[in-house]
Image 1 (cartoon, rainbow, N blue to C red):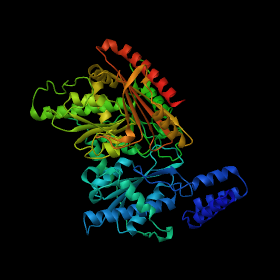
Image 2 (spheres, rainbow, N blue to C red):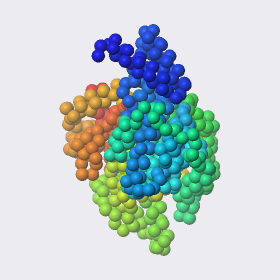
Image 3 (cartoon, one colour):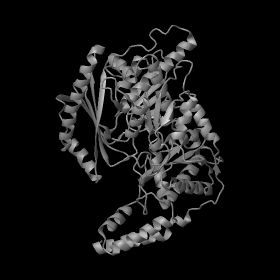
Length: 604
C-alpha cells in the first residue's frame, strides 16, 4: 500500500468510525482530527494514526488505555464490543457448567471520566444478552466490586477503572465467579486461557449496530452492599486480642473513591482519630494535586506528610484512586523524618502480624501460655517450609517481592508459595491466608475479597501500628525485630519509562544475548529465564538472577504501563540491634553497586 493509499484508508476508517460512534463528543473529536489531518497538521495525523493503530487488546488485565475515539482508545464503541464479547463468554460458560441457569453479573465503576457511562453501557449490553445484572450504587472502590462478585454469587464482574494511571486513561477490569470458573478463581481477576477465550468472543462481535442494548432491566443495588462490605472489613480487627486503638491517622484517597469507605471502615474498627487530607479527600478525575495518582510516585504523598507533621500524627495511610492498594508512611526514629515504607516493608509487617493474630487466636482457644507461639524454626536459607503445627494455611507473594515473607512464614511453621506478578495469581493459591506484592498490594482476608484490598489492609496496618505504639514502639522497631531474626532484607527498584514499546523488547533481548556475570561484585550463581516457565511458575517475560551473596535482580516489562521494571534485593545478616545502623548502610551501599551494574547491563 502506498503512502497516499494508507492516508486515504486512515481517513476513511476515521470517517466510518465517527459515523457509527454513539458518543457525540468522541465523534466530534474524530471529525476535527480528520479535518486537521487533511489540512496537513502533523500532530493531528500522529494522533489519528495512533488511535487507529490496531485494536486495543484484551488481556488478563482487561482493557486499559487513553480515552478517545478509535479502536486503540477507551470509548463507548470499544466498551460495547468488550461487554458483548464478555456477555457471550458468560452465557456459554454458564450454559456448559449449569444448564438452565441464568447468568448473573455485577458492574462497578470509579470516578474517572466516563466510568459511569461505560458501566451503564455494560449493564445495557449484559441485560440484553439475558444476564441478570447488578450495578453498584455509586462510584466505589475496586475491592467492593470483587467482594460483590462472591457476595451476590455472580458469574462475572466488571470494574470500570484505570486504577492509578494518569487522568487521561480509563480501563475495564474483569472478574469471574460462580459457574464461570473453578472455585479457586471465583471473585478473582481472570487468567489464561479465559483471557484468550474472552478476547476471541470480543473479536467475533459483529458491527456495532448488531449489539442489542436494553433500555432498562438491570438492578442498581442499594447501599446495603456497601454496608455489608464495610461491616465485614471492619470486623477483621480483633479487639479482644489486639485492643489498642490509640493511633492518630492521616488518610488520603488521592482524589479517588476510597475516602468515605476507608473512614467508615476504620471508624467501625475503632480507629476514630482519622484526619483526611482535605485537598485530596473528594473524588476528582483530574487528580489536580499530583503528577501521577499513584502513592509510589515521588511527591504523591507530600500533602499527606505535611498534614501528618502539622497534626503530629502516628501514621499516614494512603490509597490509590480505586483503593485496591495501600501505602504507609511514618516518622523514622533513626532520622526523625517522615518517610513512606516500601511495599516489601509493609508486606513483611502485615505478614508477621497475620502470623501473630493466628498464633494469638490459637492460644486463646487452647488456653496455653504461648511459649514458642511464633517459633524460630527457619534455617536462615529463605527456603519454603511445609506447615508444621501452625494449623495450616499458606502465605504467598509474587516472584518480584521480598524473600523476607518466606522466612517469616517458615519460622512460624507455614508454607509459602511464590507466584507470578499480579493478584490474579496470588489470590488463587490454595489455602491462602495472606498474600502480597511489592507494588503496595495486600490480601489480608482472602475469604472476603479474593484480590488486593487497600481498605482491609488499612485496618490491619492500623491494628499493628496501634499495638506497637501501646508497647512504646514504632512500626520501624517492629521491622527491626524481624531483621534481627531473619536478616535485613533491603530492596530497591529501577523503572525505565519508554515512549516506544519496542525498546522494552530490545532491552530484554540485550540481556538474553549478553547475560550479566555479576551484580555488585558478586558472581551470578543462578539465572532463570522466566519466559521458559518452570514447575512452579507459568511462563512470563522476565529474567531472574541470584548472586553468591544472595543478592537478587529481576527484570521484566510492566504489564500495564510502558516501563521496564528492575527489582533489586540484598540481604545483610544482623547479629544484634547495635549492628542494625551499620547493616543498613552496608545494604544501601550494596544496592547502589547492584543498581550501577543493572544500568550498565541495560546499556543506560
